[in-house]
Length: 422
Image 1: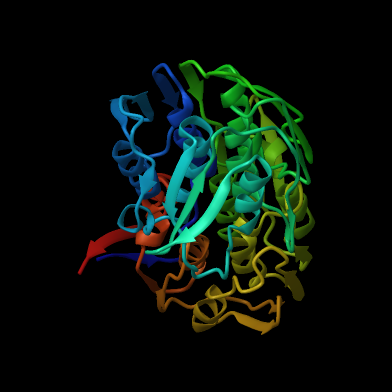
Image 2: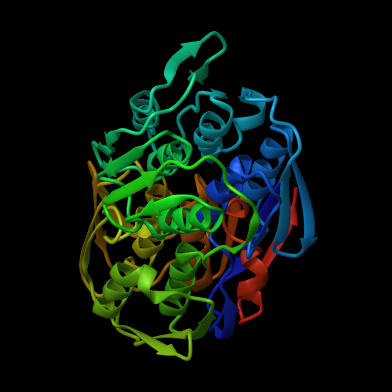
């Protein structure tokens, strides 16, 4: 099992190119199930989650060809399979996003019910309510599978608001199913995230009739078919935000290529409040930091609010601020497993329900730590970059799910990270 050994205290300088968005690529790859002609997708990141999705699609009758790094061709060659079993989907929760395309195109989707994960309970009730509103019969059957079937789908008005706001994956799933529904479907309280907008733009490019993407009200007019074509995935805003923090926490300067600051307005505002300089330059972004980091208050919210996927990374940054910061997690209130690991490295973090009080310290100290989830892994890498001495991060397979060769990108700008195998 791979682990990282990081020698801290290195200043970073240079350019990092931001990879394609994992959270946009996965549902768009799933949406190729709906296309009657081949699809070529570009800017796909090289991640373990991408490989899991390729495996799922191949088992569902899609031929996947790798044309060049970051580019794949998808062609449906068998529409007779509608069952994604537990062994196929258990490694990745995002596999549930094949339900909408299967139901919409094949009128049948049988997918293993996803379990819990390290960041808390993540039910799919909004997905299923949306499918039922479109006319599907939904049942939980033997073996823990969800079975959705319909003779036909009909447009409907569907409210997608949940306990913690709109659901990105539910919006994507129901939107994909509604593409082939007869008539008009209106999704109210839809997720506004750039990844949802990118999925809608892909579907439109293939022949769907969708308006309102990027807003809380999405309107889908049903069509008979989707064709094929080429499409380029948007850059990964969470990877970009992580490297912004890397520059800030090490008091360094980095240039980020292929970075859309319009997708990171809440995060860049917090960085500027902390004392980090964010400069746009001919499509790139230059990040530099003052030596004095100011404390701030952060509350995670659905887009365009501060993203929950950057909460752990910013907690690491604020652990070195001059004063006390407060971080409130409103999306996944249990998403704090990194707190104990950061405290092992000398941070002073106190969890009180969905809130963490961050008391700034002068330095972090290298230590053996354990990654618990994707973004917690990134937070520990950031802590290792700035910590005095050596940090060992175990279970880095988490980070490989969402960051494309993070150690190579950071080493290229001056970090010292070694990937080793036990």
